Image (cartoon, rainbow, N blue to C red; front, side, top):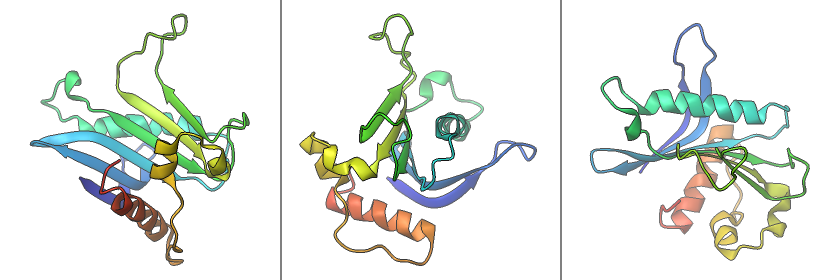
Length: 165
């Protein structure tokens, strides 16, 4: 598993670049397995769903070389950790994947997922398997830089879980 704290990616110098807080690439054999982009968003700018879409597109560019075929695209997870409920529905976790509009049981099968975690509602998470994986750390993160805090939080979680996501 490769964990990269604060990295930048830009598909074209004339286009908007992406700054990933934490990018996790799972190694499978000679290639990359699942990819996780973990973002801490402290302010609701009103554009997080579109930002998640853009980040997912940039991740696709990063994961597929010119000689690769589309079936080689791996599972991708865009995860936003937010202090507020951006959808204002009172839920601690919002999980999204692409589904057919008229037949909800039919997924697109593109293996792209977006999660928005409202950490102010952590106490409302009833599924113990999720609570165990997302329990708040017991010690304080370093105060120096945002990436250090993000890296510390992720490291603490992976150490507690034996590097399993």
